[in-house]
Structure formats: structure tokens, C-alpha cells
Image 1 (cartoon, helix red, strand yellow):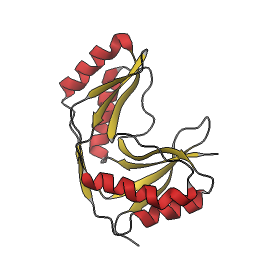
Image 2 (cartoon, one colour; image 1 turned 90 degrees about the horizontal axis):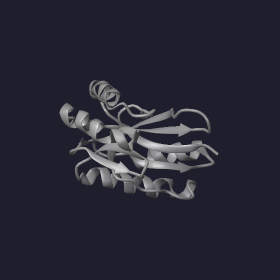
Image 3 (spheres, one colour; image 1 turned 45 degrees about the vertical axis):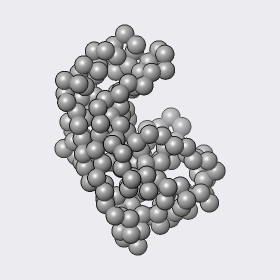
Image 4 (tube, helix red, strand yellow; image 1 turned 120 degrees about the vertical axis):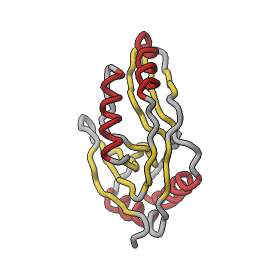
Length: 172
């Protein structure tokens, strides 16, 4: 069964800047999806068409809103770490998440939650975290953009994430 997620991609100019910053972090693995904030973390669904219809319904008449990142944070699992830029508190973002969860509930068994964030680098070995964090801090990474649409993406075993469909806000 394929895995899906719903994301809000950042603008191309900021995505290019983030690619350069990711390269400066020298992690063992770079994120495979361009600059984005995950609106709905990965989940399984057996009926992709029904899922797309539900996502489309969730954004009808939803207004555009601004996202802004905060200072970098490190998430560690012992051997490796991830550096993220959490997003500032954003009620419209949380409203969108709730709306999506309600819309897709009939076609999705289980939905998870995750803190809104832009991932900079993953799988950074413990002995290189300080160096990578200095690179991020020196870069003064701070991103903001207007979210006007969201994307449904899919991952199949052994393959990278793939774009499925874009859903623009406010259109029936």
C-alpha cells in the first residue's frame, strides 16, 4: 500500500537557498523533498482517488496564510540528529490540519501529527551536529511565505516521494 502525505512547498527562491544550506550541513542523508512544511504527516490510504477528492474538498474556501520559521532546533535519536526550523505559532495552519484530518478520516485508517517545521538536514552523525548547527546559525536561516495551496505526495517502497496533485485554496 502506498504512503501519502500533504505538504505546503516553499517558494523557489527560498528552496534554492535551503538547498545550499543543506549542502553546508554535510549530513549523511539529505532530505529528498524540496523545501516544505508537512501539513499531514505520512499515512496509508488504499483509495488514492477518494483521498484526492477529500483533500480537495478540505481546501475549498480556505484562505491563504503566512508561515514563518523560528530558530533552528536539533532533534536527536542517539546516534544521529536532525536539524529543523520549527514554524511560528500559526492558527490558520492548525485550522488547515484539522480540516484535512476531518476530510480524509473516511478514507484513512490512522493519521499522525507532527510539529510544523522545515527540515534542514537529517542523519547528522553525533560528532558533526555542532558543526552543522554552526553552519545553520551562521546562515541566519529564516524563511517565510504565503501558503496558497497544498500538495498531495506519494511514496512507494524503494522509490522517492512523488507529486500526485496540487490543491489551490478557495476554489471549489
